[in-house]
Length: 64
Image 1 (cartoon, helix red, strand yellow):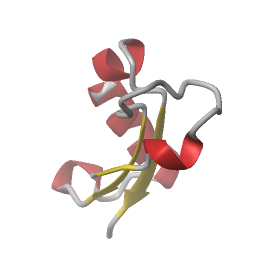
Image 2: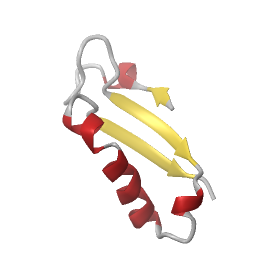
Image 3: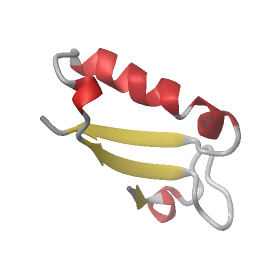
């Protein structure tokens, strides 16, 4: 997981101190066989609390 908040300075959701925009690469057996959209939904569901409390943007790359 990489904090890329600095790249979004001044954009929606950005705040001082970062930790608002992340990139993540994920490989997980539970995501195997799912479409890209369904896999992304699973990841977003797992991170729902973080997305509701400050995480503004998450770029997800599913590794197969």
